[in-house]
Each structure stands twice: as C-alpha cells, then as structure tokens.
Image (cartoon, rainbow, N blue to C red; front, side, top):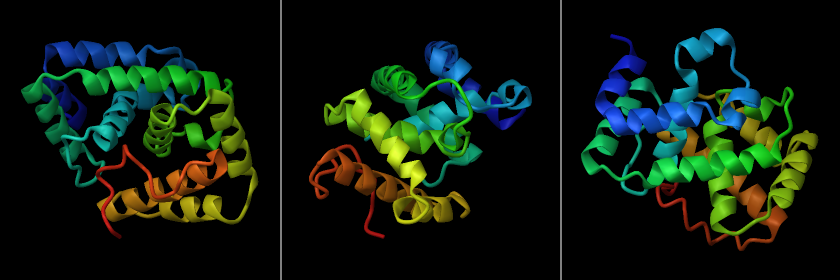
Length: 194
C-alpha cells in the first residue's frame, strides 16, 4: 500500500471526500503546478495535508513527510473536527484570487504548504488579497533578502527546524510589508524557538 493510500485509509470516509473535493478547486486544478504523474500519485492531496498540518493547532508536526502525514490523517479522523478542512477551502479561495494561471515558482509542490500557511495568516489578519498579491510580486522580484533566505531554506530537507525557518522568513517579510507587528503571529502556535 502506498503512503497516499495509507493516508486515505487513516483519514476516514468523510474527510477523504472533503479532501478530494478540495483537489477539484479551481486553484488546485488550474494554478498549482503539478505534472500529470504527480496528480496521479495524489501529490495534490499531499500538499493540502501538509498545509493543514501546519495550521492545525491541535497537531504538532515532526516533518512534512509521508509518515507524519499519515499520523495527521489519523488525528483528523479521531477528532472528527472539520475546521481545518474549512480553513483549507478559504485559503484556496484566497489564493485563487491572488495568483493568475501561469508558471510561478511559488506554486510548485514544495512551496504550496508555505504559501497556503501565509495566506491563512493573511486571512486571520484581514489582509486584502491585493496586499498579498503586491507582497508576492515584491518578494519574488528581490534577489536578496528574505527571498534568498527562503530559497536557501527550501534546499534543505524538510526537518521541523527547516520548516519553521521557512515559515518564519515568509511571515516576517509579509508582516513587514503589510504593516503587521512582527511579534504578533497568532496562527503560528507551532513555531518553536530556533
């Protein structure tokens, strides 16, 4: 049984249906950059699960690998709380308004959990889509600073430390751009002192 098949078995029927519906979202179908092979391997479901792991306050992730995703799926089934699935839909709606169809490195599989995490942060802070879009344009256009730090971190294995560092880099840069006090990051309860 593949890692994705195990995850589907662990998550339960209702949550699996909700997850499958999320993969049909316009953002996931038309803007997320995945090959047909990646879609057949259910990598679209994997990035959604990774994002939900980052924002679920009741789950403390170890990494974003298949085994931890399976543990997260079990926890979703056990608590039978659909809040994080609803959150994911709101984030996809938000990101769909931010990004146009086309190739953008931030829409690749390895970046989506982090961009989705940041979009969730923006939603929680009532930041308009246009502000997020403007931040994204300036973030990717600057070859140094936060962008270079993020790209350096993205080359590292997905350890908890590396994940938290990537989240911190994006969140600090976004907060600065959007005028959000840097010491207030309400939805990052899982960030630990690095």
